[in-house]
Image (cartoon, rainbow, N blue to C red):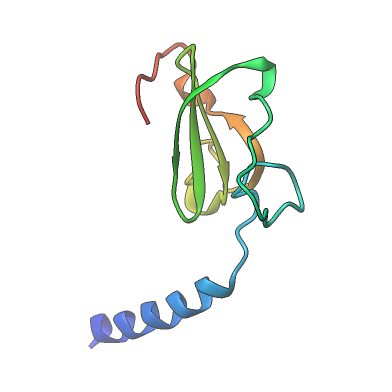
Length: 105
């Protein structure tokens, strides 16, 4: 019985999610929720150059040329890898990978 109830709840949540705005998803700073044309992100902090990107409905990732991984968007459930659940409006380096070279996202 519990499983059937959960499935019904998921469907309802899915409908509500479509109306939500996801903070920081675009990576252009606080308050930028929509852009009408494709817009290049500003450089990663420290002037690092992005060589790869990946995006989902809730967050985005960028891989820098030196192998660092950056994330931004909804921090719910720790999705961004920063050890907290804070939303990030702009790219933030994932320090958990410090000293490691990430090769793909």
